[in-house]
Length: 292
Image (tube, rainbow, N blue to C red):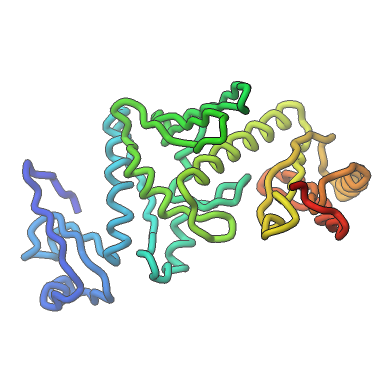
């Protein structure tokens, strides 16, 4: 239905316990609340958004940000808004709905509500204390801020741009709906770092495509003790002659197996859609001690 927004729209939140209202709508609340835009006394003629209350809470900030981005850009295009389903603390996440609404990023495996929130530029600056870096963060075509790290062991942080459609609160909502490759919640810093990693891998793949080569990467665990073997990072990126046949793949695998790699590391090949293992994880030396 076409809904013409009046100067002061009537917006009503109806809970699942208002059985008379849900009966008038002709729907079963099933534990959901309803956001009604229009006359709540005539639900059949109003615009109704029905979902569990935490889902509505996760959806509305992203809806607001999407509308702001469209208005700021002066665009008349449709506004497509993801619907993250973030469960409240201690509650089970609705698995089927969540899996359907989160997008998996190809190079890091993290799942996010909207893949168009991405890093589009990255610069490093060596310092006496380490490597400082800054990255440009955009949501679609709109620059929303920058990511900074001073390179001295401090945190990676987000700085919103002036009049940005995304502030720290909206970024926090995005983070709360996101998951790592194992399905676990992410911190804001972890999400920002993963978006930078996603950009670096995409740049690597694009560079290989320009020379008609195949991208390969070496994945390695952070360590061998204290559970660090379950957390991996990209230790090296290389390109190889284009792999298009099983024989070429086998030859590349044999070549990579002759290279020395850290304990537990393994090589992967980018197929155009995903990273696939070329070698298996090497076994750690049981006599090796982690440096103190």
